[in-house]
Length: 375
Ligand code: FES
Image 1 (cartoon, protein in one colour):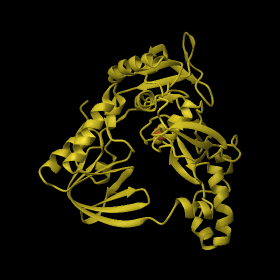
Image 2 (spheres, helix red, strand yellow):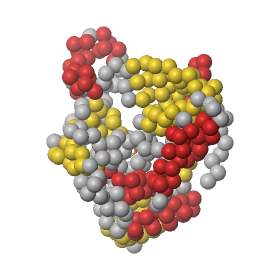
Image 3 (cartoon, protein in one colour):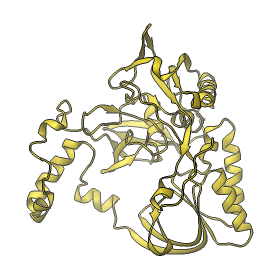
Image 4 (cartoon, protein in one colour):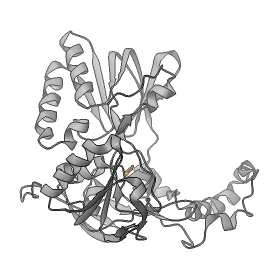
């Protein structure tokens, strides 16, 4: 693991009122992990602690409020000087939400409340706090952080969704033939899975430089929302909403890690390989001191590379096992061990390796024909 460099500019932000020091380019999740924070949110129904899990913006584990705006993914958001980050703690944390279901029974007509803006203004913050999943911004927060989205349209020959190696290569090739190419990438940095491989950052930077040199217009921090009527693709980019009309669209959205379901396997500290690799290689943070790796036959290759990466980062591998050997994951607000039939193995990190699946949500939304993912 490359140690943090003294040349990296320091950024300071607050987390639940506490000052956190981070480096420019780190994500909020990476900086908080380095500061020892594991619980980032709570599940809506049973209020179980949640934390950094997928590292790819694909689960609700790292949802926090930033500058008064809830629903921000800490693993996808870069730190900003002076940002106010806080967890959205459900009220009555120990009370299962179902206990109050008689107040909001099935068939509850929220539209009736909405008709009375006074009643709704009183009720909405309480409903949000109880669920712990939303946050109603104060008028000043909303004005500062949620300006009305500006709408714009863009006409291009080719829209590429995804700034990983394949997306960059396709975009560069098309731009080299004189086509107008727009590439959108959800993260702030290009490279996709390359950034999860040792030495991959240099290749990612080289591909990004080649795309720029070929004239590809690149939007980072931009998320393709879906395909809409008349060939328009919706892209959210900062406070802008782009309607992109493209002759051709290439979805280069890559793959996501598959999950493994374990008893109590939702505890903070149970992570998928992408989150672990990004902590080590991009954030330069040691994911844990002692790890248990759980792998399926499809995840054997992943397990080997993650074990090598973790050892290089100074993490001890306490055990490598299959899912059916695990009795339960132990710990409440952070993992403290894994229970097996033969006893407890102490650890502060559990990595689930089950191979990858295609990230095909956009293709499904657009009702495109699907092919099986061949690893
Ligand atoms: S979305 Fe951030 S950890 Fe899954």
